[in-house]
Image (cartoon, rainbow, N blue to C red; front, side):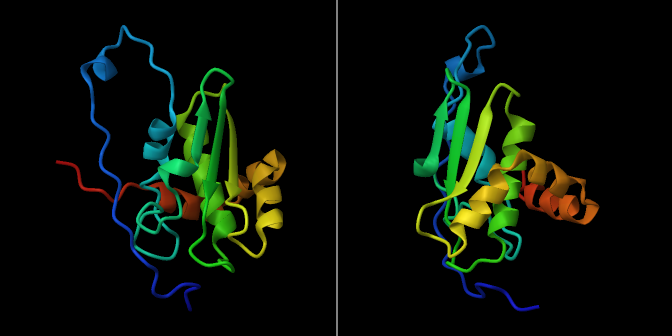
Length: 157
């Protein structure tokens, strides 16, 4: 099997978010913000490489936009190359991670960053179509691949 991008550039990870006492206080209602959503998707595994989407700079905190009040989340992601055949799978993995992690009141929009992929419009159309996403997740093989992308590889402790 040949890889789309056999030698990707690996980027430095973003510093971990500092946990403040009010973050751990269950009596304080805190809103979802850009960084919290970024932290949910940064560890998603790339389908081709043993690296995370953050390490490949496919996702970054500047391209995550959350409006907790309106219940919207928008994530723009950048494939490592303009003809990445895994772009739809990557977008689907991001969407599934957020749908599983966020309350159902959120409308999640996952798109390819403008001008970064040859089939940007087609991929964005697929990712925005709820029926196509649902059908894709009914495919057991595809669901297995998505779950592998979402499986944590990070060692705790």
